[in-house]
Length: 191
Image (cartoon, rainbow, N blue to C red):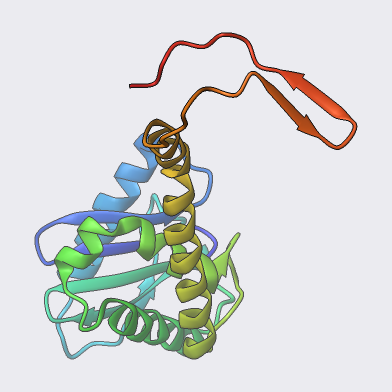
C-alpha cells in the first residue's frame, strides 16, 4: 500500500489515500488504474501488474469488487497479494460495521470517517491493524471525543447566556478570594 488506496464506482473515480505525488500525477494514476481494473472480467484474479504511470512490473494493483464499488490498493511488487485482499476485506467489513450496512453515500458524505478508519489500519504504507474489533473500538473512541469536543465548543456561549440570565440584585464591585481582592470596574448591563 505504498502508493495509494482508491475507491472506484463502476463509472466514477475517487481517491482515498495517497503518498506524496503531485495532484496531476495522482489524477493520471487514478485514470490509468480505473481503466486497468474496470475493464477486467469478473472471473479473473484480483491482482495485476501496474500500468506505465504506476511503475509497471515494480508495482501491482490488488482489488476487490463489491456490488458497484472497487476497492483498489496499489502496492509494491513484494507485497503478499492474499494479505492485501484480506486487508481489503477487513476494511470493507469495518466500514459496514461502523456505518451499519454501508452504502456508497456513506463513503461520499463521511469521507473523514472513512479516512479515520483507514488511518487505524494503514499509515505510511504500513499495515498497522487488521483486527476489526480493535479498529471499531478506536473509531468509537474518536467519535465520543468529537462529540465531547462539540459540547466544549458551545461552552463560551452557554456561559455568556448563563451570566445574562442571572438575577443579581446588583453587580458585585469587589470580589475577595482568600488573600486576593479584585476590584470590578463599572460594566455595562448584560440585558
